[in-house]
Image (cartoon, rainbow, N blue to C red):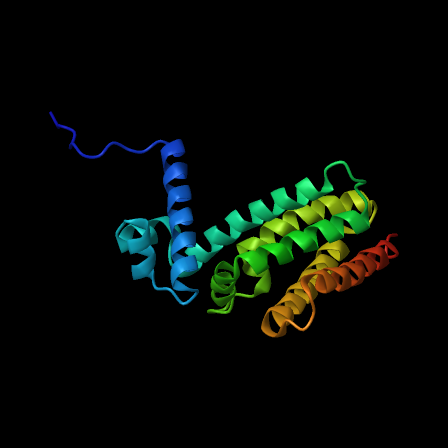
Length: 205
């Protein structure tokens, strides 16, 4: 007869989700305090765990950045939804609310944004491989399908990827130079992105 080895009982899915959320929040606070070039050692100490725990949960530092990016994307989504509450769900409103929420997020969380961008630039990853972009894209794809019914999904994907690339490049330029005010940047980006979406609507079969 075999006896079962005693040890720590398995965590429930809810407990695992709670720990992951706690680790992400701790990582965000540590990045805010120590800057975007932080090491896994600092992240582990900030969370009060060992490095193997972080590696087990996130894989590597890029995994930590992706988890932070997804958390920020959900907050951005909530902010944009709050801005749109009670307003017409049209292209100008959706575009401006999304761009305004994104730029406010970058402006208020510069260290976290820089940490995410550094993760994007490592290895063979590109802009569109980032969790922040992916979550926003998923939500906007649904909205664009509603606002532009009949547009071929392949065209929609290619055009939305292009608009994301343009938008993030413009924001990168702004964060480097700050020659425009935040409101001026939001106005300019909203006009260009709205024009791109409306032009895409002309490609419907």
